[in-house]
Length: 243
Image: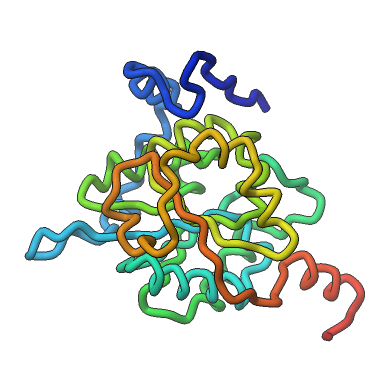
């Protein structure tokens, strides 16, 4: 995988004026297409023309668990979101394939765990043929201009965010909400991405207005931790344990 090369210059925490169009030009053409069945399933703006605020949780969901639902429900409450979409990834480029359950199995597990009318499980990336968050976000933003998207991720992801493909494009496509995780918070807040975008970090007390901001903008949320772990669940299944 070829990682995105950071733009160099005196202002390393923001892009040059013409950089946005240059970054968007690198998006794979197929990422802008969406099957008619998927497009028809997208919600439309209400009669009041209010912009829908949608949180996006991307991941392998290998498997989905109550911790995912806890984050989604907390995000709706703390960020004032109308919905949260779980974007089940066919294959996370940063994770090994060896321990990855089939896509259909992971999608089914997400649907079984969601159990909330405003948590929607989506398989957009399978239909779009995208493997990278940057491509998926650009496709959704162009297809859904009436929506305000918030990318939701854990502090562990923020710590390594600079390794993601075209991570700067992600920051300039959607605002970001980061949930703290045990043992990761300090490392995440000292990360390359956190430092680069320190000037646009939103105070936690203003988190509810995050979706109304233009990217780049992000917030770090301190929340009640949930004990569920996909890694632990997989280990228990291999060992035949239940506790």
